[in-house]
Every structure is written in structure tokens, then in C-alpha cells.
Image 1 (cartoon, rainbow, N blue to C red):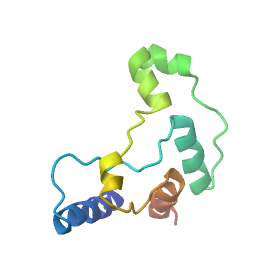
Image 2 (image 1 turned 30 degrees about the vertical axis):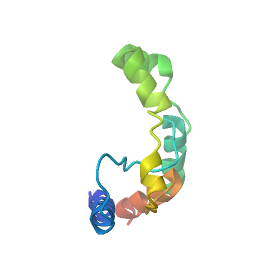
Image 3 (image 1 turned 135 degrees about the vertical axis):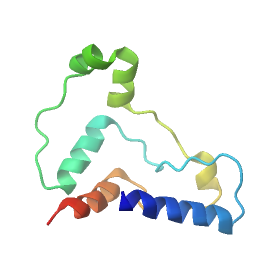
Image 4 (image 1 turned 180 degrees about the vertical axis):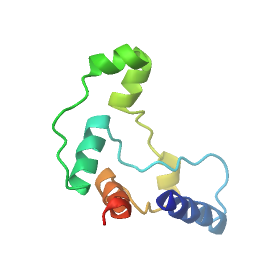
Length: 106
């Protein structure tokens, strides 16, 4: 939760400071699939990710459309945010997962 608060504070402060208005996507610029996310999180947590969830099981549980969102992602690009000059704290999935893993490692 603290990570989300930190990122939101940075993003909203930047918008206020530079007078940005309108719709800005606050998603990281790197698009990531569920498989890429799982691999990055496992790597950051020093844990194996050996058994992927079969997409057929996800389709059975969630339906085709929702399973596609889970496995393929939404592919949102923060074009206007990047054009305005904002620099993301965690621009890629590995750096974000490494930060999250620090909250859970003892």
C-alpha cells in the first residue's frame, strides 16, 4: 500500500507543479503480460515460477474475455503522460516488483 501512496503522491504532485490537466494515464510505459509479470515477481522475490496457469483453466473460470485481460494484459500506453515529460519512479515491471518484494522480505 505504501508503494501505491508513494507513486500517487509523486504523480499528483508533478501534475499540480507543472499544471497538467485532463486525462493522464499513470500506468508504467512498459506493457507487460501476466507471464512477464509472474517471472519478474518470482525473480524479485527469489522464488521459482515453474508452473504457469493454463489459459484454458482461466477461460473456464473467468470466460474468454476476462481470461484474455489476465493473460495478455490491457496494453495501455501513457502517451500523453510521457509526452508531458513525466519520469516514472518504476518504469518497468522488474524495478516495481523489486520494490514490492522489499516490503515482504525480512
